[in-house]
Length: 262
Image (cartoon, rainbow, N blue to C red):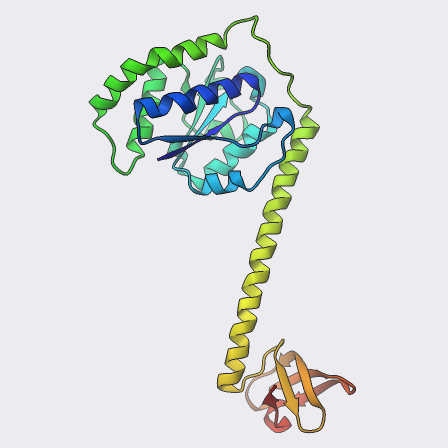
């Protein structure tokens, strides 16, 4: 089962990396995936995130005091909420209280980065699997491996830890804007492909039924080959507006125009 790990900022990244290495030791079937975009280093968004979200069964947002307002965290939380059931998205809180959450994050059941809540999180991940392990098995495995994760989390509390400076909010908003534009381009391409398929179907309809639709070609005894631009009316009153090279646009009653497919 794939688990999507969302993060922003240095300490959040360390949390995500620790969970990525630790979760498969507790539940071997879990396959964590960290966001390929490192906002702090300015790497550009790619389609990888959209692909991973589509194939994700569970999402964890690694939250620290310094990234609660990070646009990227809120963006991925919103994306996860649209992809997964809300019960399968969990903000994982390090030195953060429930009352500190805002925006899309408040709709999810959060877990603190401590023994009790982390065990609940692991059991929830297990329950989300197609074939869950026995609860006692998960609890025993958790007991063995929890000290390792605890040590990694304790390292984040070191006041001497050197943290990277967060990028300006404007830069992060530009990252999100590029992501949205990419999604719009992908949707535009999908619609264009769909329209081409419809035109192909329409051409087949012309051949099989003699019904001429906009975008199809017809042949007229006088004007020759032309392109159908519009059709109006029904039955005997059906009229076609056809563009004929050298003759311009002609409005013809289909019943009497003696048209054929070209």
